[in-house]
Image (tube, rainbow, N blue to C red; front, top):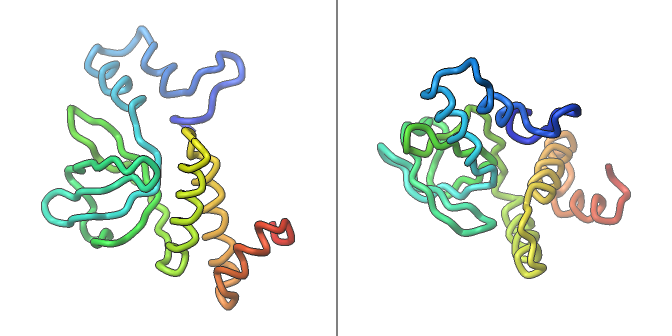
Length: 157
């Protein structure tokens, strides 16, 4: 909400409005402005130690994340998350959407298609993949590929 939903009256996100507030300190303004440079994507976890290296599956950019929640992230995992810039370092926001390994092949195919098609905004695809994961979690006895096919055909919402 803070990052992506423009307010009706101003047409700006709450985060941008906060950064323009004249009643906040310069330090707070700097933090909010840094937050506007967030990266919302699906990341592959590359290394896990005191720092975690992640790769954006859409742009293939790699990021070093400080203070990671290492108890929940393992090498090879794919997770939708938001990377925030905070005092010069990248950190995860608190929200994650983890994807099961059974969906990885579908994700890679969709990402390759989007890249080949010249897509620059991957948010709609991120939402589509999150929806697929959510539907599959509700219909877990069904094969993920069958659910994907039904969704692509418009037979499953």
